[in-house]
Length: 282
Ligand code: NDP
Image 1 (tube, rainbow, N blue to C red):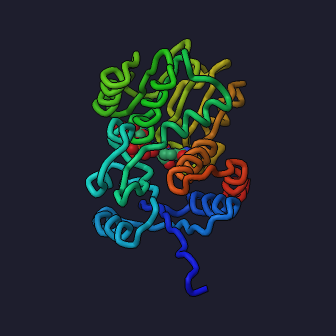
Image 2: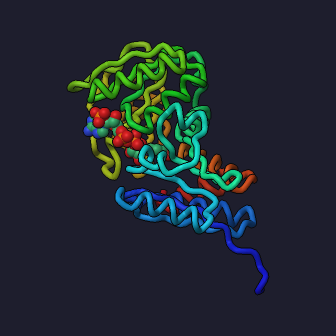
């Protein structure tokens, strides 16, 4: 046993990080693949982010996931960014390449992979609620997936306009902003509605301020919230006959992409999905 190889380490850093199934899901995926890897979760406050990344580098972690509030702040501590992360200006997945720490963003790709289970976004008219980190990633990847038109609805118009400009200038997408005031109606002709705000996080009864009469079939309604997976918006949309999609598939797809980046192997998404459902007791 003295010469047995060291266990490989990966981790997740954020604040707060409790209540997220990622560690449980990744450990199950490593075990299913027969890999002796360890995934740890660290509560790291913004003041300690620099030291935490230095520690990760010194201890030769193979990679990490970064979540709220570190997705932008971590960039200055990395060696380089993927083209996607540079465009989005945010990192959620770091991997080691030739001794360097490389920042990538898999939020959008994971969302689109999950969405394809219910509909192909190509040629569709999409409404995206929110313009934060998740929305930026989703907007860029929906553009790459060939959506016909993207409408951003955001509470703070300046933030929304920044995303619209990014999509027009760098993704060459037809995009526009509707400032979010009061009970907004979803525009006629919308094929896909995406909630990329935290409304509903840890509160299954938090209403999304929309005129729900405007949410009707054949609209596909999706939510990035994963805990609870059955948000108020999704329940309302399902009652109205819409096809719905929760945030669990996005979480699993992010794990699948990170697993491949870190280990060079493919993960089993079924094992990961079952782990997430077991963790959330659904
Ligand atoms: P950010 O803080 O970067 O952005 C939040 C966005 O939501 C902003 O546009 C903000 O608007 C808007 N918003 C927040 N509160 C309200 C409100 N009460 N009413 C209207 N708009 C509101 O967060 P992220 O984009 O990083 O994360 C958003 C959600 O996505 C989180 O719940 C996170 O857990 C989830 N997520 C899920 C993933 C998954 O795998 N399923 C992956 C990544 C994220 P404004 O600009 O006005 O502040």
